[in-house]
Length: 187
View 1 (spheres, helix red, strand yellow):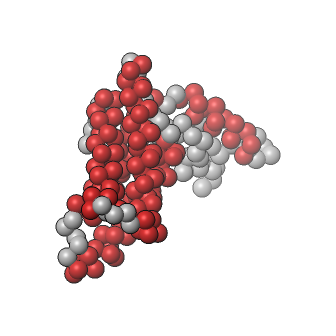
View 2 (tube, rainbow, N blue to C red; view 1 turned 90 degrees about the vertical axis):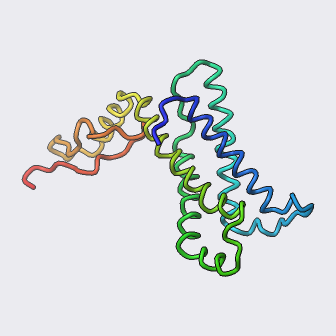
């Protein structure tokens, strides 16, 4: 999915928030007039609640960026990475280990099950992949160069030559990450 505008990305996050909120309300039993708070012991619900909070705040920040007239916007990329990792673990563990038990018990094709275990993780990972493209468009190359130059000075051997490249093959997310391949003479 290639999202080319902030508007579409913000809409995607709004749809995500609505779907996950509806699934959580159904899973807690609020629609039947009860509240099953004991299910907060499950990692699935905790990771989905964390996603709901993050993507809700990100949706609100995206709306604010649209109102300010910004064309591109990235909100808390490292936090989103952690949140997406948590929800991806939920999807992978459920699909590989827990789904057969739900199929046998007849709970597999429920709205909340499909939203919390499949749709939520897939939408979050798709948003993360698109967010990486947004970071690449908005990341200033000077930040990477300054960070790399500082690390090169600290890691330079006594002779003064550094094993760090001056520029990476691909600029990471405005962070100070080492280039994977270090160049050493004679190797």
